[in-house]
Image (tube, rainbow, N blue to C red; front, side):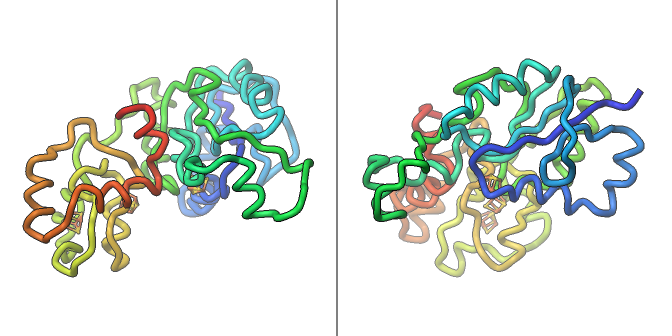
Length: 246
Ligand code: SF4
Ligand code: SF4
Ligand code: SF4
């Protein structure tokens, strides 16, 4: 019997769900193994029970908590899809200002129907079984994690840094061009896609489990950079992680 899977979204840009839909070459094969029973971007049907729920976005609107709890109640396994769901991601970028100040900046006048709270990750409301990091997620990693779950195996995220993938691909190092790069302390799994694209790593996949900070400090010193400059970059996707103290 095919596993019943569903996709759900809360506050986010829906880029992680789009990454799944962009897996055009693999989707037809995938549909031989799973039955997509709920996916707002693709269909109107709703399911009563699911084997796997992939949930994107942060919790911040009235009714979000209750809806997420309902998804949890009808799903055997719940996976946080992307950094908004995993740790709050970019949704927390404004968390150093009050909601009133933010509303004023964005909307100006009084718009009571747009009530929001400070965004929270899914784990603040329900038990999250697994997570897929990144902003957006990596499509191939999504497939690998889905495959592991379908085989009742424990999905694993890479324990090494983006630098490893970058060096293996022989990309030029961003530091040599005067750009701060978070690759030495960020979890691999994206194939160093930003460096491939001519930019640098901003840490969207979060810290590796045991970042080797001493060599990283040495890299920073060598290039005349400070930890503060690194934290400014890290802040973009990981304010939620820093607040958790990790
Ligand atoms: S993690 Fe990034 S790509 Fe995914 S929904 Fe959030 S903002 Fe969009
Ligand atoms: S610091 Fe950045 S650009 Fe340099 S090797 Fe590591 S990931 Fe690549
Ligand atoms: S290179 Fe860094 S910022 Fe870019 S996708 Fe990979 S982890 Fe995210």
